[in-house]
Amino acid sequence: MTYLQHPVKEDRPVRIAVIGAGWIGNFHAESIAQRIPNARLEAIADPVLPALESLAGRLGVSKISTEAADVLADPEVDAILIAAPLRFHSELIAAAARAGKDVFCEKPGGRTIEELDAAIAAADEAGIMLRFGFNRRYSTDFTAARKLIDDGAVGVPQLLRSLTRDPGTEAGIGNPERIAPGTIFLETLIHDFDTLNWLNPGAVPVKVHAVADALVAPEAKAGGLLDTAVVTVTYSNGAIAVAEANFNALYGYDVRGEVFGSAGMVTAGGPQATSATSYTAAGITAATSRLNIDLFHDAYTAELAHFTDDVASRRGLLADSTTAENTPRAVAAPGGVDARNALAVALAAFKSAESGRPVEVSDIAELRAAEQARELQGAGA
Image 1 (cartoon, one colour):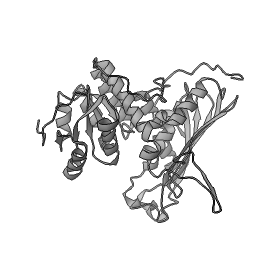
Image 2 (image 1 turned 180 degrees about the horizontal axis):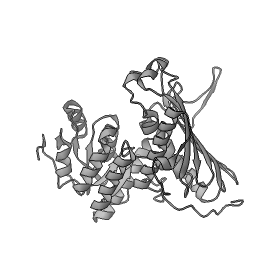
Image 3 (image 1 turned 90 degrees about the horizontal axis):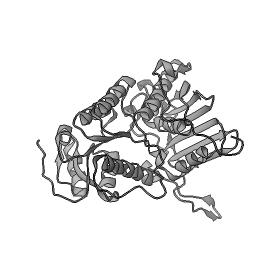
Image 4 (image 1 turned 45 degrees about the vertical axis):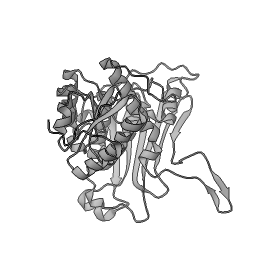
């Protein structure tokens, strides 16, 4: 083991190492170090030394390395949080599993079904816990919407909608040529696909039709950029869902969900930073969030708190419950089946956008529901 620095002990029972010191790695590392009482940020790895040293110095972490292998081999690490670029996700999951570490991986778990299946198989063989970063499940409004669905408020789901509009500027997308083809499906809309799957419990997606273009930065379309997309998903229970995304919403970061059914409708989300609204001679205004780590600050923290609690439980560590009171433990923590179902829709959408034709999800992968359909309790169910 070749750590560049050595640790200072701290009595916090769940010891987590972060791989990746980019912007989301920074936020997750902060959550572990500062916002989750029973988690200890044991180590950080990143090949970019200045970013690594900056993050470690800010959070007071003494155990750092430019090699992921060091944190994977560390016997003092209980769990690994993977915040590296997508191309490394599946191999890092498998390596962590072989090392006996529980894993929290940012979405998606792989670039292909084959990559993800190999990672899931490695986790199953090693008997470790594997979770994925679909944070909308932990946002209080989306959690409340799911509970209403379980209680029968919408009856039988018929129409679903989920959207993601990334915050933008009048100048448009910076360096659009650096955005990899398929990003809008694999790294943006994949959140919406998981949300739609989760809000339609017991069903699986069967057909996908996507339309996408470079409407924000048309000059980058020749390089493969797609910055605007609408995807229709048909489910095994007959429900029809629509997911949409755009990379340049001038008014802020906007994420919403909606489920309409035989008995009613539930909605969740929106761009407002707070419920405060001003009414003046200039009109009606409300502040909006400009970053995902602002809009979903508490959700990001809650998903890691849930993960930490479960690591502590399965390893027999003494940890108090750290999950936020307004995030019920009934939230289904997204695992391998959830990640696989969302990735299959994303890959089908990418294929559909390229061909201009609907794609059967079974052509991508055979899916199974992540959970059973809930028994409806509401009137008109």
